[in-house]
Image (cartoon, rainbow, N blue to C red; front, top):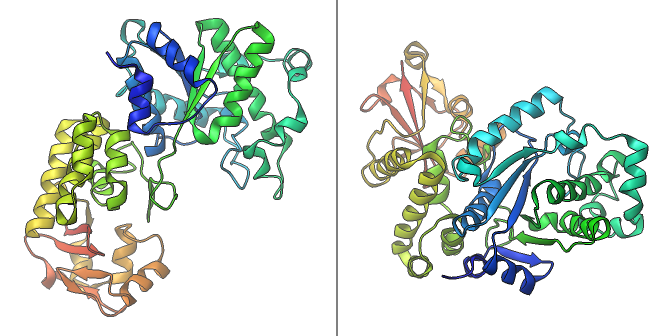
Length: 408
């Protein structure tokens, strides 16, 4: 049986590792307890978190034991990694609510039955710390000079780095130490923007416990030109169906750039790599087959087979035939309002097809909006009841984004 390290390497997950040969050997010969942390800074996970969950699932399927750490304590401070400004402070009540949502969502990918995985909250040990004893026990092992060379801090120095955020690296390192002591955790995983924090934890365990610990980071989910994936005009692509519907989630993956298809199939699905490479090699219009499979597989993992199938059927109905679909995104409006006519700018705003009225005007000027397959050529255009076909009015943004307006 192949080593899971080789599986992760072949599929394109691994960015950096503290001791690559030792980690590979460890994963090949014994059951490893590893952890990934999630700070509950929102009430849902997004697609960037999903990549980490898929990696954990690969490791669990290979017989290793995940520790999922919910950052109820570290969220009180805020991670400066990848930030140009300070995170908004949240109340303990909001943090707990968000953490509960994370636990529910991660349970779809990680098997917590029969002690196959552990879920813990770092508030359990961080919130009870006393300042002076913690400084004496832990703070003495951190060099300020070395910390300031970390990318997560360097990027913030010009705009200002608060002392509160400066403690984040120490908190995350302490998490690793506590998980090592409590659960025998020897490997920390995270996105590549967490590298500095992860090596701080391995160093702290070496100093405090005289043990070797390991860290490994995964490539961030980016487009071919290096931009982070998972953003749309209306915001992040969430795993919560109330924030991003299964159909919208499906459509995000169905519409990704051709150059990213093979990478996403490798990172976000469990299809065999031979099939991933075959699909990724398709050219011209045939690449749409690969995109459809990608969208279906990822939606099935996140929302289940029923939602994946209904999203696929809705997409095919709209794209191929221009048909109405019960599963496509729909906004209901008053029939009486439609009798009087509703301006296209207002409709685009109501349907959340654009983030602002300015963006709506820009799209209309560029010919990017159609109603019932007829291009809108004026910002004064109005929708009225005469446009209803099969019970709805179909609005299209660009070539691939559809939205139904349904009078009630």
